[in-house]
Image 1 (tube, rainbow, N blue to C red):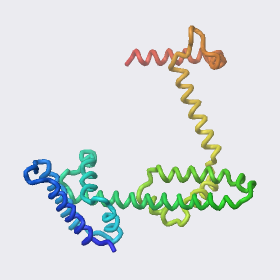
Image 2 (cartoon, rainbow, N blue to C red):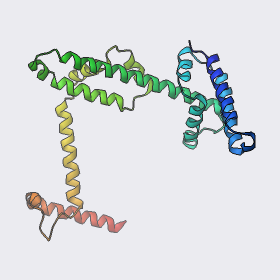
Image 3 (cartoon, rainbow, N blue to C red):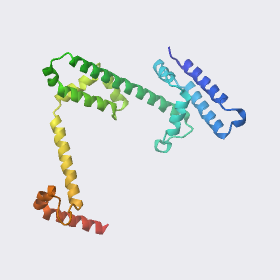
Image 4 (cartoon, one colour):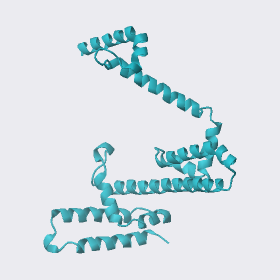
Length: 240
């Protein structure tokens, strides 16, 4: 059973190993700075309340102090408006990230196992039933990908973790949604059209004074309109 006492014992062993790894004659400023930082993190953890679950997550790390030290070195202190020597706040953020990563992993593993079971059950279905389930297979694969690469915050992840079958729940919600897959395809198509229209407007597609064959109909229909827009763009650039 993991507890803070076990965590501190592990850290003290790591500190001892770190000290013994560098001979006294070779202990330079970098060594003493790293030792000071790691000791500061040791003390911060010692004075930070840890639940049994959090203690277990910390103990799972290969090297607790190295992980905390690496996290500290990668922080953007200026953006976070955080002092580099505020080891208690850094420790708090480190534990928060550890907790988030674990819950995120739990969610994805639960959904991934759910998807694997869904596919396994399909193996016992008839060919027609498998064909009928093709849409569900594709959509659940997309949802699983969404859960792997997302921007959900901790609260949202915790809410999804209250569902025994989050993958199926999200799929069912999608089926009941007014926003259909065709709506998404239509939006993508319209976005492509807008992008291509922009390209046609501001770039010169003429080859030897003649547009490519694929664009001849477009230019024949909209040539005058395009020239007016191009003139407006040139005038705006001259004013800049």
